[in-house]
Amino acid sequence: SGAGDLWTELSDAEPPLPLAAEARCWLALQTAIERATKWLVDTQPLEVVADDLIAMLKDPIHELLDRLPHVLPAGAQQTLSSTIDALAADGTPRALAQRIAPLGRLAELFEVAQISETADVPRSMAAEVYYRVGAVVDLDWVRQNLDSLPAEGRWERRAVEGLYEGLVYARRQIAHNVLLCSQGGGQVDACLHEYIEGHEEQLAKLRVLIGDIKSAPHATLAALLVVVRELGRLVGRSA
Image 1 (cartoon, rainbow, N blue to C red):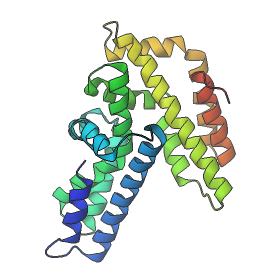
Image 2: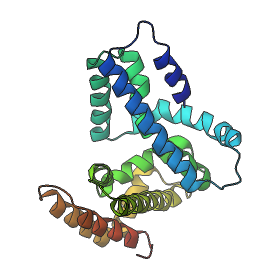
Image 3: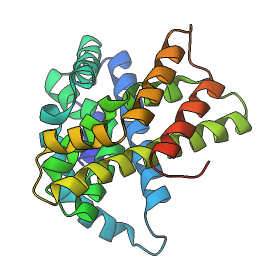
């Protein structure tokens, strides 16, 4: 993914970056690496050797990072642009900021690469489906609010982690279900339409639920628990 190279580049920068810029870059890289590492720990067999994992993911991730600006929905593209602008405003060279900011999606791109392999579809198609299903019931909003939940004690942190895992699972299963249509020769637009039509009642219920939560001052752990539970029902996962 180039994260290691960026880590070295930041350490050896001449002249050194301004303190605020360096701190923001370190934090962005640390967060991206932590999320990607958690994805690997949660999804990959224990017997897989790290070097084999790196070799397996290197080319897919480079390809997907190049595709990312073309497959992100408008809201996510704006968030990415804002992150780049914030890094640059602190004094990070824009070219460097443009390499660091997309790594915040690294764990998602690992997920896309795996979906592509298991569904036997091109990575570009898997990426398009993965990000477009996020807009079906605003899954990105759910993820962002899970990220921002205050988790002061270990039980709260475990609860949030459990909800995040449930969200990742649901998005993965929705993407797989949409891609089943593409295996029969369907295009992404048609496959998404078919999935939405086939699950309209459940999707409508989720949209109403998320809309209700959005109308509150802030999303609570209990409210997001209900959302993730409904997502589980949508993809056939027991509570």
